[in-house]
Length: 82
Image (cartoon, rainbow, N blue to C red; front, top):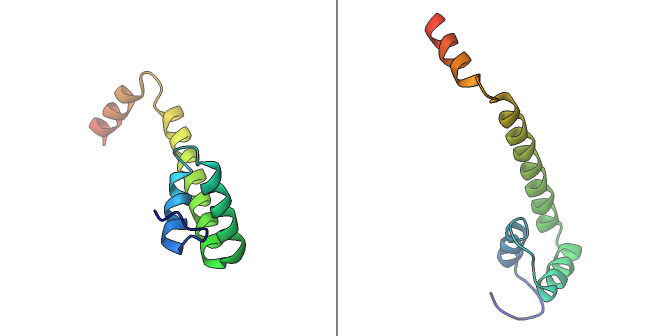
């Protein structure tokens, strides 16, 4: 990634994805905020990315709750009965 002041849209999308998994450096956060304040397309991408990530997390939490001890046996029994 170039160290200029202004990010390209590609660099911005990479930082949006990267910030979900790790802490961004202060300089990168400031550059990201500046780009997002001026680019409606990258702002939309960030909103969509946040929406997808939150729904994946909610789905993951739901799946974990459904597979409590004994669930595997119940599923196998249902398969055998159908």
